[in-house]
Image 1 (cartoon, rainbow, N blue to C red):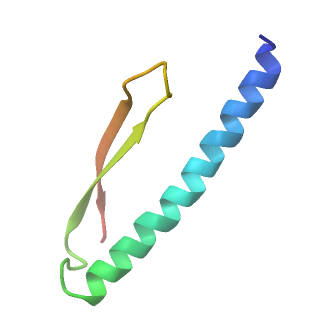
Image 2: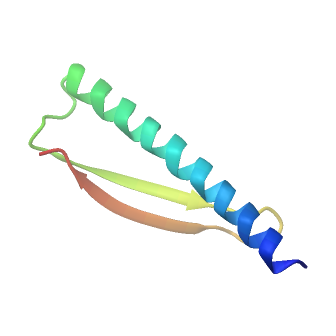
Length: 68
């Protein structure tokens, strides 16, 4: 395995995950605010799961995001 290529490929994947995840979170929060399911005083709970097919059952990261 070429460590440099592997590292670059992992970083590209994580950048894609980060950018698309941020968009999804922002849109979900906007929708939640618009339809009254949440208020700007709320915190939203988030969870991300990374699964490596055939190698891992998954790694889960959880947290909360304050809206104000």
